[in-house]
Image 1 (tube, rainbow, N blue to C red):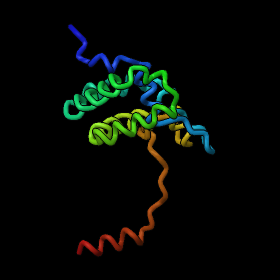
Image 2: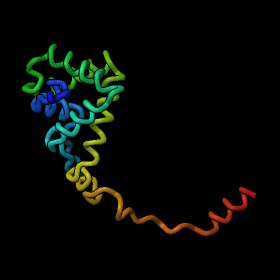
Image 3: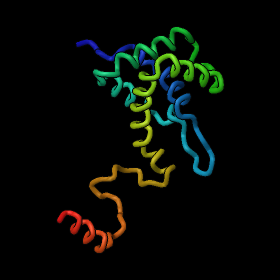
Length: 146
């Protein structure tokens, strides 16, 4: 059985550079890692490949970027940023769809959650502590239904 994932999505160096261009490392206050530094390339690639609606357009846009700039992965971050901006101008829908996949993988990663001060685990089954509800607010809602 052959792998249905487009070859571009197996190019870890390209994807890592792309992810770092989309979400670069930041050190203000809380050291946030760049998206390419935390090893989410394969997770992002898998979700793009599984996205029947936007996946093919994302792959086509990224293939065009890689063809226009074969050395993309070796460029400095400052050189990658304008290329991503140009791609966003040419194909905003594909870049928005790409960002959705990247953000979901990035903000679920334990390293990022810890940097944000969140527990590095899914919110359930332990859940989050919530403030107690003021019974007066519930009473006000109940009277509105009447």
